[in-house]
Amino acid sequence: MTTPEQFIDWVKQTLNIRKTPAVEKAVGVLGVTRLTIFRWLNGTMPPSKTASLLMERIIRDNTDWLPERAAAFARQAHEGQTRKFTGAPYYTHVERVAALVRERTDRPELIAAAYLHDTMEDCGVTYETLAQHFGHAVANIVHALTNDDARKKQQGKVRYMIDKLTAMNPDALLVKLCDILNNISETQSANQARNYILIMDGLLSNPPPAWNKTHADIAAQILAAYRKNWTQE
Image (tube, rainbow, N blue to C red; front, side, top):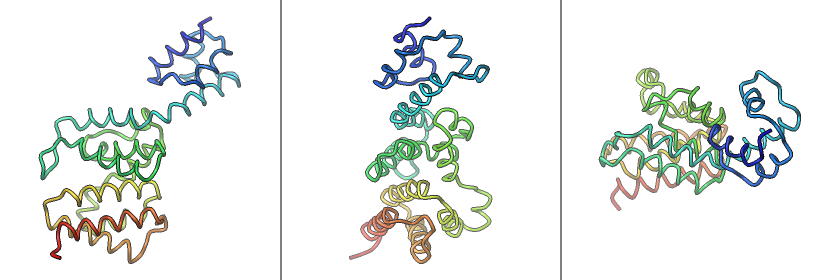
């Protein structure tokens, strides 16, 4: 039988999960072999009720660490990429988007999705990879944020983005608006800035079903950033 300490070490190394008080406390009552744990995880042996509760608790505890893991993953995925106008490492953009999201929510999956929001579109990361590492909730948000280039070309960027944002759920919409806020604050292209305002006009004239006060507040900040950077007082 493995000891609680050995089990915790194994969990940390194998599942990349931190030791937490809940895991430390719960594992003390569970005496199992490493082979049994492996069989639980790969599905060849159904775990006992106690083991199932423990594994669920481990996963739930680990949710709080999602942003840190997502940040590290995004940094590696975007390595070598730079911002179009500033030449800064591309990772600085996802850091700022994540910071904007964090100002508005403490939900780990949304902050993680903010770090990862461009990994499918710009880095070739698959949905399956994101789901495996961060769960389907995060992968679904990133997928919703990923553009369909063929459709965007067919519809035109502004119309495509209005339709896309209108169809988003509240979580994806929050991340996307924070993405636009950072972009319009940094862009040096008047045309790109105007496109963002046209997108905002489209959303504000016919708010999406998911629209809420937080979304409206970010939209107001986007408009303010445009007035500050692109209009004469």
